[in-house]
Length: 275
Image 1 (cartoon, one colour):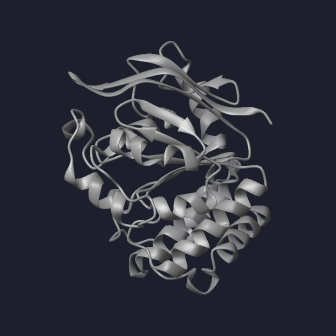
Image 2 (tube, one colour):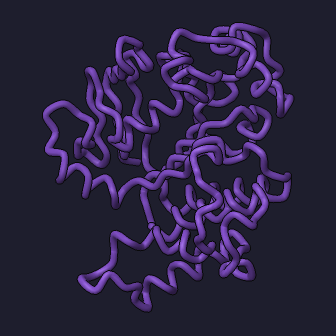
């Protein structure tokens, strides 16, 4: 098993506020890693640093041995092109304009844009990849519907389908289970596990600690810095959750961490907003 993602002593500031301090960890290929922490703990900042969309004050991140664009001294253009083929990001629902007039098929087709030739048109192979991705999340019958007309669970499935169509090696999923029905959650977990079995690496943030035990191979506990990186069983021990959430959390209750996440504050909450 080889290392796909490596973060070394990553520091991220928003102005004078430190959002992420000294984050160091590695993820191997074909693994699912859960990202756990209260709102304002640095989860979204970590995603953005991996994507190279926020600059790092210090430290480095490499994907498949190559630096990402946020690294100091990295060659931004080359790093961007390398990263674009390796990483797919599924954002939180709050970050998306659901009123934008675009169909489900068009959303999923965005995952193929990096493969388009000089004509910038989808080829037969691209259309086949889009159709396969839609089928895997059971949205074929809704492919021509406007994305804003879907339910919360269907919307999340559409963006996961976009990631599948892209064929990325690393998937970053930011709260994919928030606001979805149980059927969609079960389907998303099944798809995530299938992608892992096919060799993809998945980093997924979630407050649903009960579900995390079902599918994650490992877990990161975050509170402005990485408190622990180990198996879900060890990370979700009560004493560790107290360190992360500042209060006792029932790791077997699906909504416990979500409630805890909104009841406390950290020094970087104002900088990072929702996460």
